[in-house]
Amino acid sequence: DAKTTQPTSMDCAEGRAANLPCNHSTISGNEYVYWYRQIHSQGPQYIIHGLKNNETNEMASLIITEDRKSSTLILPHATLRDTAVYYCIVRADFGNEKLTFGTGTRLTIIP
Amino acid sequence: DVKVTQSSRYLVKRTGEKVFLECVQDMDHENMFWYRQDPGLGLRLIYFSYDVKMKEKGDIPEGYSVSREKKERFSLILESASTNQTSMYLCASSLRVHEQYFGPGTRLTVT
Image (cartoon, rainbow over all chains, first blue to last red; front, side, top):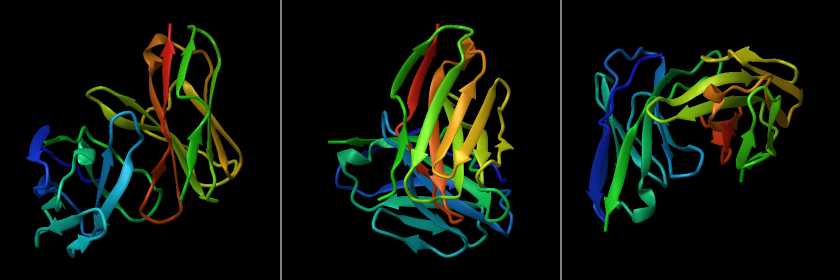
C-alpha cells in the first residue's frame, strides 16, 4: 500500500471550512484514498473514500487531484466536535481488508 | 447502527499474566481486526480474521494470539503479558466493503 504524508497539526476557526491535505505520490491505479478520524478517547470513525472522482457525503467532501498524487478532505462548516486526529489511508480494494494508519493530522477547531 | 463492543475500557494486569480481550460485533460482519495504538506510532494491526476459525497475522503479531470461534466474537490473547504490551487496544469489524467500524478501545496497563 502507498505511503501517505499529512501535516502533523492544523487549526481551523469554528464555522469555517477545514481543508486537510494528504500527499500520496506513489499511489497505484487500483488504490483508493480513505479518510478516518479519531476523536479523543474513542475508536476511529470512517468518513469517506474515493478512487478518482471527487466524493461528497453528509460528513465531508473528498477532492482528489487529477494525477491522484494528493487529496484534500473538506469539512464544510467545522464545529468544535470536529476536533480530532484525521487519518488519510491509501489501500488497494482487493485481498484482505487491512488498513495501515499513519500518525494523521491533529485538527483543532478554535471557537 | 453497527455496534462493536469491547469487554473492558480499562484493564490492569501483572507481568506474566494471561490476558483476554474480547470484542463482539452485532452486524454479522465477516472481517474482524485487532489493532494497538501507541503515541507517535499510530494504529498498528496485530491480527485479523476474515471468517470463523480463520486468522491472519498483521504487522505486529509477536506476543499475541487470537481466537474466532463464532462470527460475532474475536478475542485477543496475551499469553504472558509484558510491560511493553501496555497500550490502547482497538477492535474493528467490516463487511467486504470500505468501512471498518471500531469499538471504543481497551486501555491495558501491564505492571
